[in-house]
Image 1 (cartoon, rainbow, N blue to C red):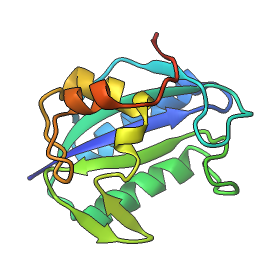
Image 2: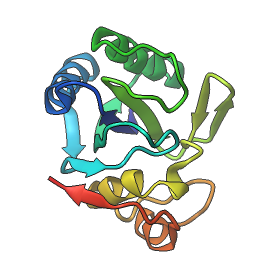
Image 3: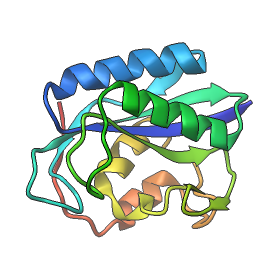
Length: 160
């Protein structure tokens, strides 16, 4: 059984409804959600001239392989109307795999775990710290709390 941390994000349409639907689908398809952070609102990262995002981090347990986890997440994104037209562009639902237990996976470009931008994104670290402050990043060998403290991202992350 693997412990998986997923980051959910939405900035198109009824963002709260997309987040709720994603949580429901993930719960059904992965056998339940073990932990979930509060929902946070943040400015877009990467491509900045777009609507603010709602973000949340959840923890699930699964026996699926890492590639199967990726495929399920992408299927949920598609079911919720995600179209991939612009890197870091607006989307109904984005599901990023942050961690799969303490595994290090490099099957680029398809799957890289831990997610390569975790330490640079306050909007990921803050909700992740809420549910897993002592989790140790398997590459950086620092806790999520330590990574958040050291993060240079000055973007506002507002709990809603």
